[in-house]
Image (cartoon, rainbow, N blue to C red; front, side):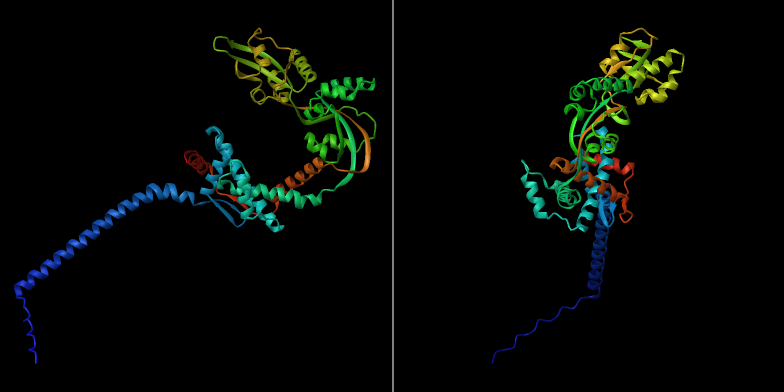
Length: 422
């Protein structure tokens, strides 16, 4: 039988050894605790710096809600991304305008998406991806929302609003031209009554580019299309309420824009070496009006009063007709007089085809009527697009839609610099 192995006797610590061991343990705990406190302190400092220098100014603003459309929220990060898309390549000084414009785009597009969904019209992610790939070169995925909305708008127009536009309706064959003054319109009307050709005179004299390019012949049009073509309701209203075959009297249209104006200018001071001058000037919408205002000035009426009442040039109207000009800031018609005339002499009317003025007179004639004529594809597209535009405008006025923007000027400025700087 094997011997049982003897156990090693336990070593007993003396009181002195035990005391020394307990002191060592105590020092280790103190050292360890101090180390942990140091690490916590360091991490706190680093964390505070991270929080103050990155989280607060960089991360947190990007994730704050800046626009809300009903229950859908858009954060700053999304707004900055859209600023890059729509404002890319634009000068910094124009980005303020872009910043306001992008807010409206985001609001409008989300309203369209929500209302289209309510009508059962949607665009799938797969369809968006295929559309993005169809571009040459393919668009980046940053354009997903822009592409989706465009596809929704096309689908709304061609599926929903197509049903609201008739295939055929009453139409009128319309001839028209736009002239700058009543006296010119009366003169041209007399020439037409004497047998001159409408198309020839419209192609030569009309100040509306559509009428000029079509030589006055607008063709067969349903009600509403002439308004869209010419950007005025005056002619559309006349054409569908007039007698067939009768040339109109001059029809005044105070809102129609045209690319012509007439300056009356008086030079007060001129420095030819630096190419600067101070002038009094007024911009009128027709030669007839310019002659009438000039006669009143010559009769002693106050320039500032007439400029405020009649001028279609903002700077001159707001400053009593007076403003400073440089030789290269105005049209050649304006500058040629300012830098080559006597001081204190009021000019004759100076025509300028580089400025836009409002107001003029229509001459129109309805050649024929068809009570139920098929609408052309182009005209149907115009009517569908117009119906869609009015529908979108109505979304903002619908009381069930709640649209909110939390962007103030400071936040917009922050977003602009973020978008520019990447």
